[in-house]
Length: 190
Image (tube, rainbow, N blue to C red; front, side, top):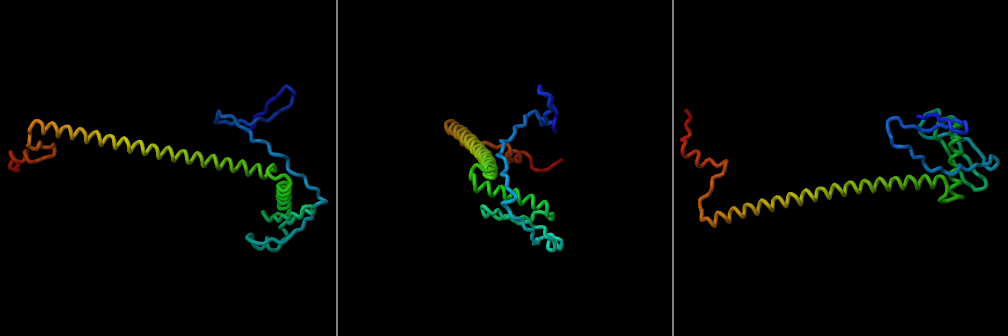
């Protein structure tokens, strides 16, 4: 959504607004302008299409092939069934290829690829951090469980030592032990 603002220079400027968020919109870094190609330097030919799309694609000259004579770059496009849309897409692809040859790492395509690579690396780093924290949390839980078992074992050892010191040799009945309760009761219910 865009909100219109009046500035001191008496012109209207459209400013993007987020309706349900207080986080400001950070604009992306501007890309260099797309390379302009002279029509005299290119030759355009229209070819019959191939592949999916049926009889319409096979019978019509909807595919576009553009050759840039100075550099020798050839681009073929059959993205849509429309010849004019394919020509427009082919021109932009040709401009990107020529710019990549001329400028290398400073071209639009290289800048976009570097940004995508950086974003992917950031996501992977976040994922690794998440799973590393989960693994560390599991280790802490296991260590706590080991400490609890060790403490319990030490308590049992102390109880056994106290019993040995007192000289009691008879076994103490447990809560679930039925040996004493069944001795007084013959098992008959009244």
